[in-house]
Amino acid sequence: LLSRRAMTSLFGFGGGKGSDRITITLEGENPTKSVQSMDGSEGMVDLPIYASKEKVKGKVQIKVEPGKKIEHTGIKVELIGQIEMYYDRGNSTEFCSVVRELAVAGVLTETSNFDFDFVSNDKPYESYSGMNVRLRYFVRCTVSRNYSSNYVKEEPVLVQRPDMPPDASTPIKMEVGIEECLHIEFEYDKGRYHLNDIIIGKVYFLLVRIKIKHMELNVIRREQAGSGQGQSNESETLCKFELMDGAPVRGECIPIRLFLSNLDMTPTYRGVNNKFSVKYYLNLVLVDQEDRRYFKQQEIILWRKDIG
Image (cartoon, rainbow, N blue to C red):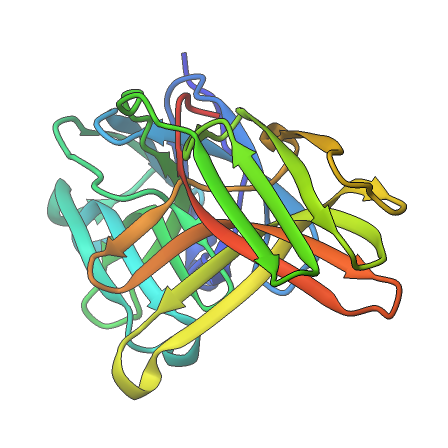
């Protein structure tokens, strides 16, 4: 069964007018995910999701108008994995490139179809689109020509890498405070969570001599990309979850129950191709009546349980 993926120019893909002659159709009924198109439009597109070792296969159609012909020096299809820094768009890094030759030099006198199959290719990293870096995979078909520009078409795919459950994670317990003014204990049930998990914990007030009016739990994503002088470090707050509104008293215990499935998150990435890392933090924030903020951050490890 072939499922037509009618997607063009994601992340600036396409290849110009000649790409209209080429149609890439991916085989299978893979789950899809809606992502933001980055071709200048504001729409969303649905891309098929592949596991890291799952084969990518399908068909390429080269359209030839009746009575016309296409002379070429070869037709090939490639599966490419690429990392691109937004500040250095002209200098991307290819970490994965597999080529299949579809036809040797010749002449196409009618519309022609070619099968392709990338069977044993291991896609080592997940697709990622961040604040300063993106990692993408795409299938590219090239019709090479001698005296004219090549016909090129690219079709993007997403790659995800489910992991085995990590070893049992011990709870995170910490004490924070200001001498003789504030003393709290907080606890999270573990330090490793899958992307659809629930963070369960509690905050226990041992000493309260500051007039606290508000407490919230923030989930923060921190992205580090590049190296040396070109390195960027960016943080974004994914959610602010209100835990308490009003003044706590000594001995009060505030429960925490935060559903991660509502957040657009990725697993924790460390040193992807020595190009970038993505980490996640829980930030407990207390605000007093004079709007002074007290906070404590704790890193958590995220992992992917399922494709989707």
